[in-house]
Length: 113
Image 1 (tube, rainbow, N blue to C red):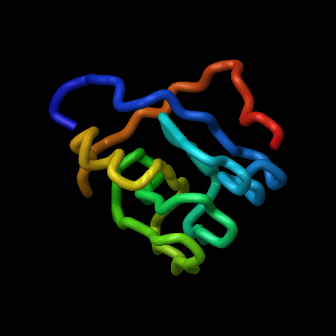
Image 2 (cartoon, rainbow, N blue to C red):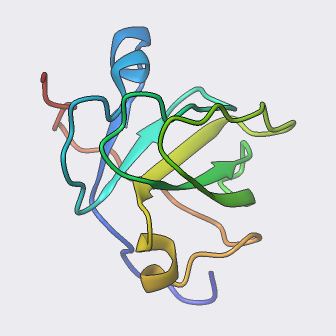
């Protein structure tokens, strides 16, 4: 990205259990979910369509796509993490392939369903 700005608050799913659960059971998402490590996702049992960005080890967006509910994605070569947001969020944020995303960690954990 050309300028430093906060796109959204994000929860980080960085253990096996939270990555597997992902957004299942979530009705609405204002921010984003970051899955680390991760290079593919699915949208089975999701309540809404997703914008999905695949990031390489440097945080560069290598692929961005919109996934409808109940779909299986394919692994993205070179991706080490994935950002999921409610469909339409990436357009609002101006997120594009090639942007560099910095993920800043907080002490918050992904909530249990």
